[in-house]
Image (cartoon, rainbow, N blue to C red; front, side, top):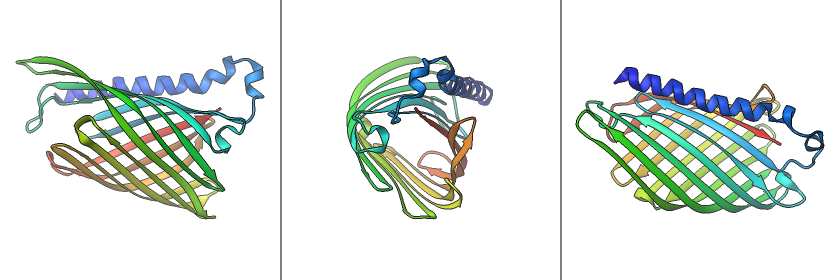
Length: 246
């Protein structure tokens, strides 16, 4: 089983990195007029998250509307796709479960100096394929989500990040808080706390994040730490995120 999850993790990681690489190379294929377009109006992002038994990858974009683009207050449209691989049953781990999620969010982002705060809502779709030695199942359902995102630099050397969402599927709630102190221009290091809850499950993470790494023309975030869940022993986790503005 561990080998199967590891193989799935490598396949999922490869898919996310391939999409990211394709997005990063897109400017070379675009018409030169796109390079001259100002202001920037889109953020393309991807992430990979892993712990002892689960791997989750996602990719998506947020589009700003209005003459000011991303640097001005205005409406935002976001689309995101994600997929996770984990055992179908825990304690002991058996089988495989693949969960695919997609959501579309429409909202408004306020830009006040160095403060960005966005509120958005929309539908989300979930499809789950599960298999063990004795059974195979598939299900899909649709629900709604509301999300809040905040990014601020109240002081020259201090970054504040806060993200949260609530969803109707399984009455889910997620919250992440991550302050950071500036190491160099645009690069921040600090603690992060993440909490997730649904009907019969909860997870708490404590770790460190490094935000603002510039590499290959992209902005990267890495994080790692320890997590405690309601159904498994304590374990380590790691997260890799990347975004690109165009």
